[in-house]
Image 1 (tube, rainbow, N blue to C red):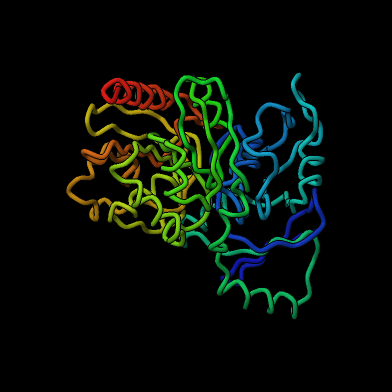
Image 2: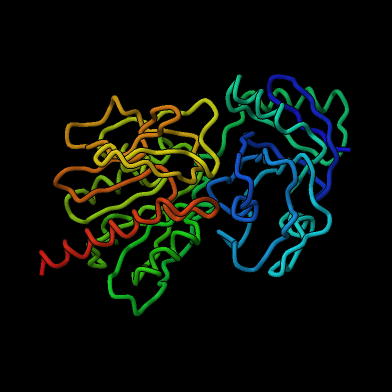
Length: 362
């Protein structure tokens, strides 16, 4: 028997089926029907307890190809039911073994849809997940801690690489990628387009990027509140006008902050593989994969920031360009993983822009 304790005092009992332990985190949900392996290994979920709304998780097991990072950074995992016997020709492990190997506390036999409905009504909430039953005194102490819990301001240092490294060294176009918790899907999307990728840790300075003679910088996804990353935002500011930049998710949010806009926390975030987004310049709609709890306030955009994408469900800003600075950014994930491939074309469009810029500067 396990327990989920919410900061509002709600206690939900379920059955533990993975690692034995306890963790505190931010309780969020993902509505994807497939892709649990990618979700489990997406560094953007660091410090969060993830609820899967699809009722059965684990039926196709865990393979060697769909990892988005070398480990999981989740604080916990909640499902209605887990599949004990996986069935897929690529499966190498079952989900129980993977969760145990990663020391992730997981609960099942919980009414996940009712729990998600609660979050939709009250907003994202702090929670404590335990593989066992806790006494009243311990629960009272946990509830007190939950009132002030916040994901660490240093969490991107946990998910970022520690040293610079190079991928696809023979690629035709060199890009400096700042790793705030980058997904392998993003790296693979760039490699597919023949980029030589020099990956830098989140602590990199603008001076180092410029000293290494880079003209193209990519800012990755990652976890946490973008406004917490004062150092990173300051270094991004120093790069404006000196390099071309493209940002995804957290990278998009920090580009906006560096340009003078503001961000805010969404009531319960966008996490799933079916979010419709419209291109405001072409009126074309694409279905996107998303995973974020913060948004850029469209009302705070500066005059040089051009809104490009908007979420059709709630009108939140999903992308912008900055005139004259060769800055492009999107909130959603063009690489998907999991999700539809509609937005993959954005990588192609950005690559063509980069090629034209390089031609003009020769």
